[in-house]
Length: 281
DNA sequence: AGGTAAACCTGGACGC
DNA sequence: TGCGTCCAGGTTTACC
Image (cartoon, rainbow, N blue to C red; front, side):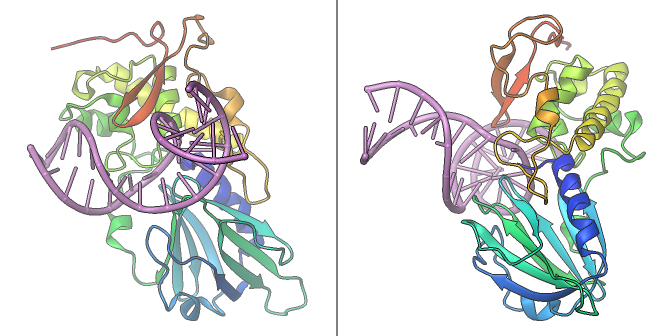
C-alpha cells in the first residue's frame, strides 16, 4: 500500500495525538509480522514517553526517551487512532495505549492493522540506529536528490528507468504508483534504459518525482482500495492519477489508450504517445 | 556488482 | 455456492 506520501500522511496523522504521551500498555495479538515482534518489546516500551516522530523513506520512527520504535506498513498496513478502546477488528495485530502524565485526560489508542503482514514493528535503544536505516538512499524531497546525483547513478545502470527509480538503493520512497506517475509527467517511457537518459530528461524526472510526491502528500496520499489515514479517512490523490491503474483508458492529455506492462515484476502504466520510447545505443 | 525472480501473506475480483 | 487463478501500495533473499 503505502509509498512515501501515505507514510508521511500517517506520520502527520498520529503525531498530534502521541507527542508527549506515555506508553501505558501494549497488546500484541499477532507477533508474526515480516519480522516477529521480540519478546521484550512491551517491557522495553512501557512507561516510555514519545518525544518525536519522524519518517525516513517508508519507515516511521517513533522516538521515546530511551527507545525508538521503527515501523513499516508493508503493502497493506495502516495505523489508526482511537480515542477509546474499541473492539479489535480482524488484522489489528498490535494496540498501543498512550496517556498523559497527569492521567486526567483520556487515553489515546494506536491500532496497527495489516492484513498481509508484510509490515513490521521493531524497537531499539535510542542510541542505536540499525544498519539498514543508516544505509538508505537519499530522500527524494531533500536537496541531496538532484540532477547530478541521479545522473551519476543512472549512467552506470542498464535497467529500465521505471525499475531504477523504484530501487530503494538509489532513491527511497518512490513506489509503484508514483514511479509510473512521475515518468508520465516527465514524458519518459518507462522502459528507457537508465543510462540512455539525457541530462535534461533526468533533470525533468527529478523535478517530477518531487512534484508528484508533494502533490500526493497535500491530498493525503492515494487510496486505491483500503488506505486510510490514522483518522480513518482515505487519501484523495487517486483522482489526480494520470496513468496508474488506467490501462485502455484515454490519456488525459492526448486520448491515446494507456498501456500496461509488467516491468521488474510490477505493473507499469504509460501513455505511448506522451511517453515515446527513445532507443539509443 | 548488477540484474532478475521467487518468497513472504491475505483477500478481493473474476471466470467457469 | 464453490473453486481455481490472478492481482495488489514492499522488501529481502537467492541465484545467474
